Each structure stands twice: as C-alpha cells, then as structure tokens.
Amino acid sequence: MNLGDPAIRVEGLVKHYRRTVALDGLDFQVPSGAITGFLGPNGAGKTTTFRSLLGLTRPDSGRIQVLDHEIPRGLNLVTKKVGAIIEEPGLIRALSGTVNLQVAADQLGFGHERIKELLEFVELEDDATRKVGEYSKGMRQRLALAAALIGDPDLLLLDEPLDGLDPAGQRAFRARLRDIADEGQTVVVSSHDLADIEALADYVVVIDRGKLVTQGPLEEMLAGAATRVVVADPGAARATLAAAGMEVRDDGETLVVEEVDGSRIVKVLAGAGIYPSEVSPARSTLESVFLGITGESGA
Amino acid sequence: MSLLHAEYLKLSRRRLYLVMVLILAALVGLLAMAFLVFPQVAPEAAAEGGLPIIDKPAAYLFGAQQVAGQTWFPLILAVVMLGSEFGSTVWATALSRDSRRIPQITARFVVLAVAAWLAVTLGIAGWAAITAIAASGEGGLTVTDWLGLVWKVGLIELAWTAIGLGAVAMLRSVGPAIGAALAFYFVDSLVILWRPYQNISLSAATTAMFQVEIPGEFGEIFGGSSLALWHAVIIMLAWTALGFFLTWWGLHRRDA
Image 1: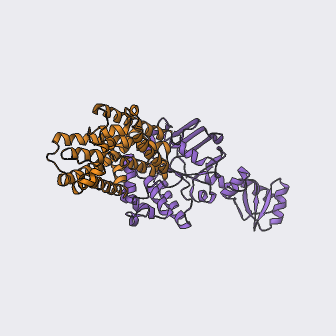
Image 2 (image 1 turned 90 degrees about the horizontal axis):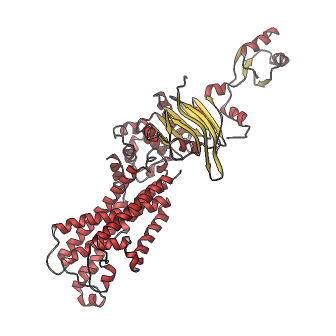
Image 3 (image 1 turned 90 degrees about the vertical axis):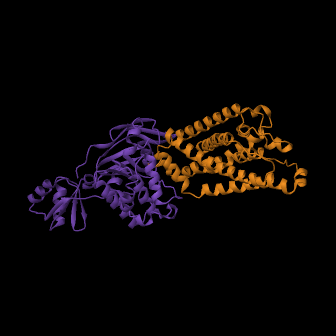
C-alpha cells in the first residue's frame, strides 16, 4: 500500500524517570492513513512515548510533531483530532456504556450524534445500557475504542489494545482497526506481541531500551534478504550456488538462498544447466526479523 | 456547557450522591430530634443535659448553621468523585487528558459545589419544616434572610469542595485523600479553641457565616464564632482559592 506523509514525527526524544532512562534519543515517523505497529519488549519505552505524544508526560528533550503541530505547544490544536487508549480502557465502571460515551463526547466538546453508530461499530448496541463494570475485558476494550473514536479523530493511539483479549476478541478488534484505517485514519498500535503486529500493521516501528531499532513498511521488512528456489535436484543446485559464493540452506523441498537478486540466482543455475521451477522472495516472520535485529531471545 | 454536562452525568448516574444525601438527611433528622423535639417532649431532661430550648425564629438559623456545618458532605463528595477517576485509567485516556486545564477543573468545582449546595439546601428545608411544626415560639425568617442563606451555603460548599478536590489532587488516591480531608475537618474545628487560629479557620468561618448566638454551654460548641461576617467571607474565599490552586497544581504536576 502507499503510505502517506508522516502523521507523527519524533526526533531525539529523551525522558528520564529519576535514574531510569525511559527514552534515549528516540527517533521515528508514523505514516498517515495506515496502521503502524509500535513494537518493543516490555520496558522498551512504548507507553512513555505514547504519553509524550499526548502531552501526558513532559520529555526532557527532543521534538514531537503530531498532525503537523509541535507537542506540547500545539496540544490544544490536536487534542480533538487524536483518540487514545493508554494502558487500559479509560472508562467509568459505575456508568453504562452509553453514558461513558456521552461523558467522552462532552469532555472533548463533541455532540452525542455518533454514539449509536459507534456502539454498533464496536458491536455493543445490545449492552449499551449495562454498567461497564459488568463488561468483559474485550467489551471494555471495544467501548474504549468507541470512546476514542467519538470525535472522528485523524489519529488513533492505542497502547497494547489486544492485551488480555481472547483470540475471537483479538480478531474482532483487529477487524475494527482495519475498517478505521480503510477510512483513511491513522492508527498506531503498540504491542510487545510480534504476531499481533504482523497480523495487523502496514508499517512497523521497533524500539528497544528507549531507542529506535528499525522502522519501515511491514512488507519490506518481511520480504527479507533471501530468495526461495524450487529445483528438481536441490543437491546439485546447492553446490552450484555455494560455488558462486552464495549462502544456501534447505527449507523442506526448497532452497533458501541469502541473495535478493533472483535473476543472478537463475543465471548461475542456468549456467550449470539447472533450471528452477520457481524463484520467489523468501518471506520472513516478524519474529525472525526482530530477533535478527535485536539479537534477543524473545520480545 | 458540555464540560458541565459531563460532570453532571458522572455525578447523577451514580448512587453515591443519593446515598450521601440520605445519610445527610438522617443526620439532620437526628439533630432536629435532639435540639427541637427532645427539649419540647422532655424539657427537664433536656435542661439537665444542658440542651438549650431554641425558639423560633432563631431555630431556623441555628438549623441552617448545623446543616451547613456538615462539611464532610462536600469534602467526601469531591474526594470520591475526582479520586475515582485517579483510581482508574480514565485520567490518562483521551477522555480526560485535558482534565488538568482550568475549564475542566472549574466544571468539576461548579457541579460538585452545586450538588453539595443542593443537598444542604434540602437539609435546611427539612429542618425548617420540622422547626415550623415542633419548635416553640413565633415568627420566621424574612425573604432576605432566606436569600442570605442561599449564598452563604453556596460559599461554604464551594470552599469545602475546593479543599476536597485539592486533597485528592495532591494525594492522588481516594483513601489517603479522605483521611487527609477528614483530618483537616477535625483538626481545623478543634484548633479554633486557640483564639488566634480562628482568624483563618475554615470551620470558624463556616460557623460565623450564620452569626447565630446560642445560649449556654452548647453555644460554646455550636454557636457562632466571634468573627464578623465580612471576615468569614474573606476566609471562605481564601480557602476556596487555595483549594482551587492545589487542585490545579496537583493535576498539573501529575505524570509530568
């Protein structure tokens, strides 16, 4: 997909909590009109970054631009254009789903006309009059999403929104986020779960220990630096490619060659009279990419 | 207006306010029994216990003073309403990340103070009804007197609401804030026995707003303080300003 101009620009963000360094010169960008996965292990600085973007935490230094406005100076100009869920759904449990949305609308100065539509969107119309304290976690997450959408924001910041949801709840939540992004809104979803992000994101920002590790379109990241080759005689092909200086490994019936240029592979093999039946980019998993970059045993 | 409506929704859709009003009504009923009904039914026993017989029209003002003196009401209402948002993550979300801003704080002040004012006004109305039926003597308050009660009670509720909000904004947790607010409530009303402190005491000012003189030993406890009305008003405004500032400061430094 085509990614738009940056909705968020962060440069050199630094934040200390006493002696703990939460953000250590963090730089990244978030393209508009897409779902960006904000990935990092627990304690990487994801929530601190989100809080900084929303003006809830004051960074020690660095520059934040959200929807072309400097934060925190321009916070008043972007507040109504940004919806957010930080850590857990921010709902009042003693109130019903509908009243929570009314409060959300009133707090930000919006009307109540979208409430019914949003309750339908998050599939809570039948539970709208129940108290939020009686909701399941998945229902609370969906209601919080509705509350964050109350002002039809240009940008949604969702901190670990899939955490604790069962698989069906995760699938339903992901579907709603995809609908939102398809409408042209920018969605940023933080997670420590690589599979969540791989199933959801168009663009990925990976941070660790308060610093950027990598960022880019998910497809490019997963395309990796290898090529999958299917041949009738894998042994001969492996030897030929190895002789040409390429790293080759077996992957079941196929070979995975550490070489991006497929035409070079075909040329080498054809020179030895071997004609592959299939040559395609070898798709990595986000986990293998992440582990390759961070060198860690898990996220 | 929408901020006021948000605060109204948060308050009106909970049982908290209703429960507190019922507790206040029960307390007003007990006070009325003790000061109005009991001295009429058993005057000798009342005299032995040092209970004064308060006749009309002074009984109306005495009752207003007693009901408005239930300052735990605005304190606890403010602490619980704001503190319950700290207790959840409401505070950090899109719903309320503007909550530290002055219009948001003002909306909370206004709605909670009006709610407390309404509850106390109802309590005073209840007391007035019992006085009209049970108290001895003749006469009543003038319209001007009643209107005077309206703004005086409003000022009292605003000041004590401010203290409650300030406590919870600074301490960020309902339990400790209720403890601190009630400690202030008791300590402030005890320290007025030390005369110089009366000049700045919120409890003394609350009492002095009604300028009621009650004879006998109960007058020492429940009667009006020696402060002039203008002095009491200044104390009220000063504590309100302090509570507002503490609320703003407590919220402003939160998470920063």
